[in-house]
Amino acid sequence: MIKKFKMATKFVLVTGGAGFVGSHCVVELISAGYTVVVVDNLVNASMESIRRVEKITSQKITTYSVDLLDKQALSDVFTKHKFCCVIHFAGLKAVGESCQLPLLYYKTNIGGTINLLEVMKENGLRELIFSSSATVYGTPEYLPLDENHPVGGCTNPYGKTKYFIEHILMDLCKAEPEWNVIILRYFNPVGAHKSGTIGEDPQGPPNNLMPYISQVAIGKREKLSVFGCDYDTVDGTEMLICHIVGCKLCILKVSTSTIERVYNLGTGKGYSVLEMVKAFEKASGKPVPYQLVDRRAGDVASCYSKADLAEKELGWKATRGLQEMCMCYMHAKILGDGSLQIQTDSAVERKIDDS
Image 1 (cartoon, rainbow, N blue to C red):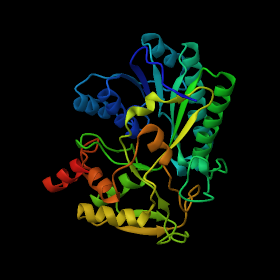
Image 2: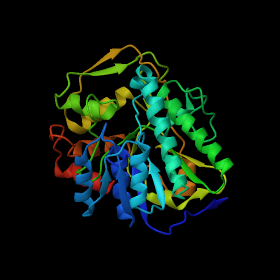
Image 3: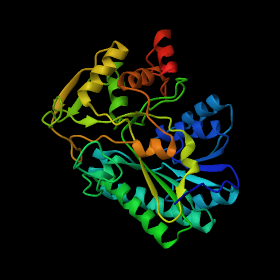
């Protein structure tokens, strides 16, 4: 049974709202008429992203530098605002790092989420949208992946934290049917806002492919390490799926009454690492030196989605191909000191706006 979220007020809490996907979500929320409050510990984000979102939206955004592991500080935020919904992005997200620091990932991602759920319940709020990951599927049994594919068998602690959180939410919804939960499983999100004002600029060495490629292209890093060249894929490198950030906030309108609803967000087509490198070189006109190295712990050969359910029930569909993703990423005035900005000509900008 599908029903609409209760919209008594239009205040939405976004955890991790200063991050890559979170900041783009904040833009969409404000454009849809919501008032947004952001909670972010800024471990892998910057207040500069919030300032740039304010520039895009011409609105001041209330932001609290709060770690979800600090339950009292989180509770204090809830005493100041009456939220209609929480969109939960906050958490550590690097696959490789999670294999090296599993305790940190379990404590941060699972512990922080439990604190959030308890504070929500204490304040009578049971409307949640959770940012999960395609890593919950583990090694795919078939492709493209749909929402009915078995989950579990995760190949890294990061994916396991998302998998465990999904089960926590399932158990919660069964025990307390008044909870309304939506789970969004992202498949390697890539992109930037079409204004070029916000994009992806992680603190320290990038853990995602596209920002690393761009840093190599502009000479900030010497070369890209391609982990594994003996996978059963088109060119031996990992097969990934990317979608441009900007999912419309129709997700706020749909929920289930007794159990969480799950949606894949992706393009339905896979691209190998080397295909992405070549596409970025073509879009930017800059070489991207790379070296082939051993496989990285926790990775899988191929992982891309079937996103028909999101289109059917949410009206969401990824519309940009790999070349457009690369151009949009280049176009962004990346955060920090501006060193990642790659100028594009007006023809490229027009193509981005039209796509």
